[in-house]
Image (cartoon, rainbow, N blue to C red; front, side, top):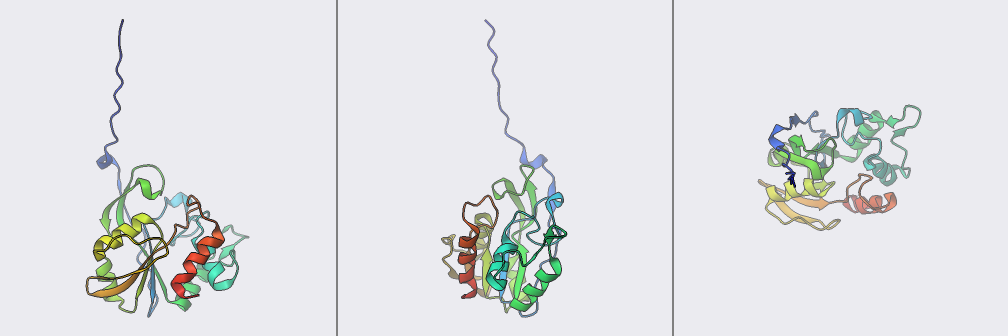
Length: 202
């Protein structure tokens, strides 16, 4: 009798291409808040060339609920995409900056799931905060992003919705870990918005 053995070889992650982040940080004058995700999805999933571009990511719906009382206030229903001009006006008005924690990554699978992103080059958060010292609140929108910031601050990853005061470089911050705004995260939109309201004291 012939016996055949099948071996499974793990994927060699170093054969996956390295992607660099497509955008510079968005930092309004006198920004007070900095939101950090991990890395953008692939371009075919963008509805706009800006942060949280995926139509089915609820970040901008959460912002619409918090600041405008309408989940679709930042959505252009006619064009079926987010309204980038309205988004930038909101960010400027509220002093909200945006960046990500991965400057270069490998996608271990063909998606933007944190679980399958290898961060090759992390954010230099100290340099950004030194350049923009008005930022006092750093808000991460997922566990992987939080782990990067917590490592640079030398603190444990905080519980969701529970801030921790720490320092990155010479810059004191309050670090918030927020629930992911991905639809894959099992929390209703109104509850995500309620969690994010705490950051703004609303």
